[in-house]
Image 1 (cartoon, rainbow, N blue to C red):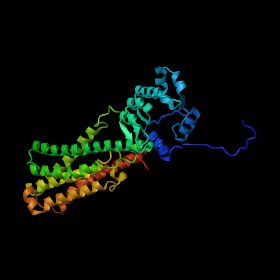
Image 2: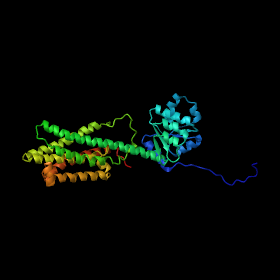
Image 3: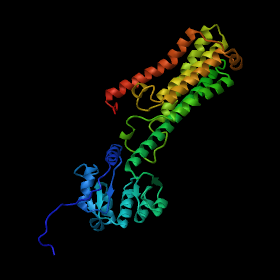
Image 4: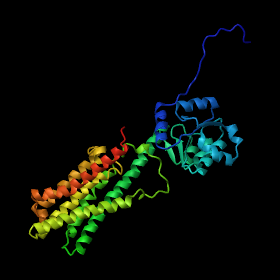
Length: 380
């Protein structure tokens, strides 16, 4: 039948990967997340797409077909699964087997799928992700998450957001516990030294309202470190108090207590043993020590000079609001009678600022110099 034909044209079809997906694969690799392609396409087609997507990026990455997978025992697959980046010409049973092999190697597996045949593998994975647009109802029911826009880049963005939330929880804990440790140690040490109580109960309640309220909540809105997607994944067994958090809490709580007591003693003995003046100075020192410390809690690695003072405007606004509230308690006569405070002069404020803000600034400078010497400063 095919005789005396004239060649007119050659038609070809291509389903190119999204540019956003290419970038997301790269981001995931930097974050210590390995991307594996499982497809029913021909081996050569799958390999070409994987190379374009940077899923295959070195000589160690392998491509395996479903037939080759059938020839492997579970033991053999478990020892080779870490080197395989692409699976081609696979069936649903292969997908389930791959997920099980990865989990046996200790990986936390996120599996995406859209068809009914993907449901078993999606269900078996630690995190099953179904497609929100093209996904079947069966796969959606079997999954833990539904990807609303069917875009792989959204998964990478979700990982980043999850890391930010986890970091913000640690910041919140670090700030609140260090501040409360400082308050407790201030009262405890003053009692051991035989000094009059440096703070009244109503003043302690006010400190908790001013410092543990808006500033602590604003920490939960932080955008995270600039290199948050450059870190390796943390172990699921890792405690939220890992990486020396209890030590930092005790150290900073102690420093807050020391500057508060120092201000109290100076105010008491140099102020003519005026107990109300000394308490007002200690009261203000405790508040300002915590408000300046909150900026250091924004990162466990970088200083405020590296991440910038105004990159979290909610925190700046919260701190300013707390400062105004504290000044009202000190200078408004009505509040003075309630909180047992007196007005402070310039000399008092110089002492308070030097002992609170000054110490935190010096510690931030030390952190900046230290990280620059190590060459770990991340530039986006």
